[in-house]
Image: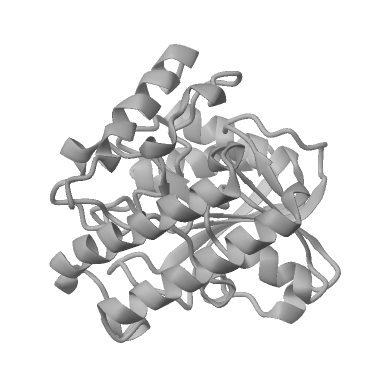
Length: 285
């Protein structure tokens, strides 16, 4: 995907955040998604804002084109089938991180976590205000698609609102106190050293938007995530916004094997969007 194609993809997706009451929830990750394309989709995540502008174009994105919603630390542990003890003393990258409270909570218990996201170019106060608006739109939209979600995760729309608000509050406060943990970045290029992190977690971005981000972008992004990762990356989920499995998975697994990485699909302990219940684990051999 060329620079201009990436730039067009981001701006086309940006329209989806218009104040029309049809938004889906962002994964706890910022994202821009076009409103006309948003109608009828099953996923709660028009998140991961990174409909990636090409490198150097990040300043072009406008705040209203980002959906700033996030998941909690506990959701991350279940999503990626982890226990806190698995990460103690390790360096972990959350990319894209959006409004997820993983980094803030992980740091409190000795996990050296860093989050990267295009949204972090904006002031935390502005992101907080945007996030509160987005949570309201997201809950309304997801509630309208109730049978496409497993509501036992939250007990209902108000439970979802509470969890998303909790994640937003924790994240914004940590951004204000520790801005060095939140790095503005635009995939498929990251401003980190080779093998800087022991593990990378990537939720609700790559395969969620396979209708907008082509295979070349997926390959480039996976390669970049692995470049900055020493041991393994975990990607969740393996379906798009309509719960269709990523069609080029076989091709991507061949690419991984060609680079000497082992690849394994593993079940997740988390399923809110029906059908989004497994992750891809890529490990250096």
